Length: 65
Image (cartoon, rainbow, N blue to C red; front, side, top):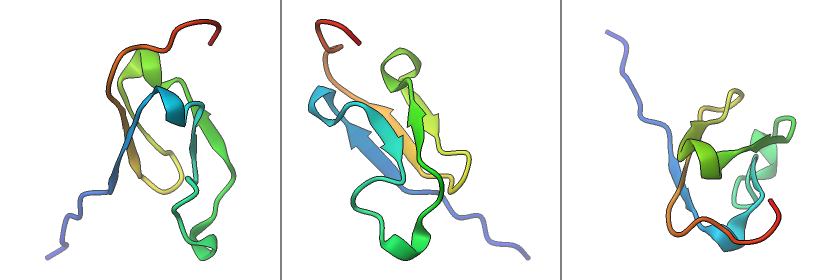
């Protein structure tokens, strides 16, 4: 029987923007093309390459996005 594994969750705040994957904490061997996410509007997104989930928490950033 196949085991279902939940992908890691990375919580981001305004200081972490722009949101992208692979993130700096990922090992080099797990690299894939860099993708950027519009996480402030979406709230939570999942990387289409590795499945890592990203969630934005906190106040929306001020100024130009």
